[in-house]
Length: 167
Image (cartoon, rainbow, N blue to C red; front, top):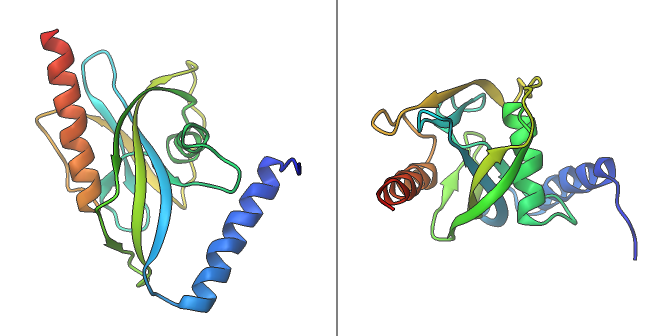
């Protein structure tokens, strides 16, 4: 079996999406992704301000060839927020959302949404091409989300935190 390095997977992913888009243009694609909710001791949730839209969303992104959902959320959290995490609990799989990117690319993202915990104490730089800034939000101050899927994930984490506080 071929063992792919992280660098090779990244090249395959970019080539894969680029090759698909060269063939289908902006036609809809089904894309697999993972994202996560990191909650601090004040019960605030970490979000990223996205560089492509200026709106807010959960750190996450598309799966690279050879990755699991857990691998994807760990890698994407590091890229988007500069934080190493571990998935704690799968909260939701969403498959009924549709999105058009600012460049016209249309997708149906199949997303695995996790509750995550920090795996280390230090934060590193995030990718400025993907993230303008990161910030913790309290549950009663939902920002403008970049798409409906992220607004639904916000409701999912609110429900999860409220039910766990009652238990």
